Length: 256
Ligand code: IPE
Ligand code: IPE
Ligand code: MG
Image (cartoon, rainbow, N blue to C red; front, side, top):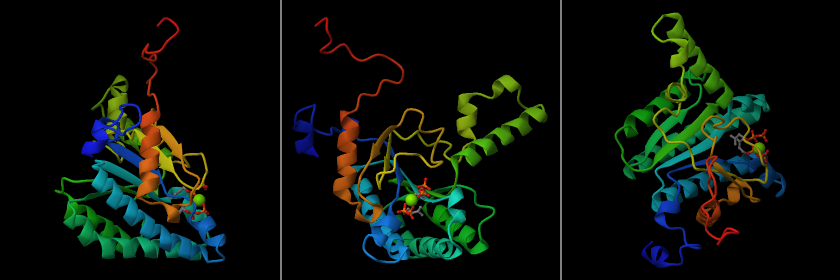
């Protein structure tokens, strides 16, 4: 990193340009497999290997929060066999990788609706969170059975209940309170959201939190994702000008 810091300010990814929080929509497993005449499951299996590479790269780059979209509320509409294969891969991932993640000081957090999931999955997710609760390295947020509209609706319902009980006034329903009732409470909004497979949509991922995120859409499918792809997305992010509704710095403007 020392050589990067010394490089030209416009090209290098200086530490300040490395996002604190990156969201990743891991897409294209099925197409990766189909293009190789393999079953979709093989794409998902290879996708887990790409996830390991992604987590390792994020740790090594000093990213504080990585949120990965692993199963959406809408993914239940897939064929039963694929759903069950995806559940199997999640279970295997937690069982095989939890100790290593813990060993690397990774804190695992799960976002998404948990109560309707099979009991054995709920227990595994709870175990991953409990074991790593006090870790201080990368926070890996796993979006599982996650849908952002559902998350926002649920936050609204909780606040409505507070108002109905007289504990809050309607005007107390603020941006901060809504944020604090989302699954991502306490986690800064992602500065960067990366989606693989060339699709350019959010598919119900972090809708509220992405208000001012930068988006990088990569043409590769998720099983081909690696450290270089993550670095490329961060380099692209570093070239973006984030304005948050303000104005551009006057450097190089018509007046100068
Ligand atoms: C992403 O790959 C994995 C999940 C959504 C669980 P897909 O399975 O969506 O792959 P494509 O988009 O069909 O290629
Ligand atoms: C989004 O991908 C969900 C995950 C990556 C887990 P999908 O493949 O489900 O999204 P759509 O259907 O193409 O929008
Ligand atoms: Mg897809």
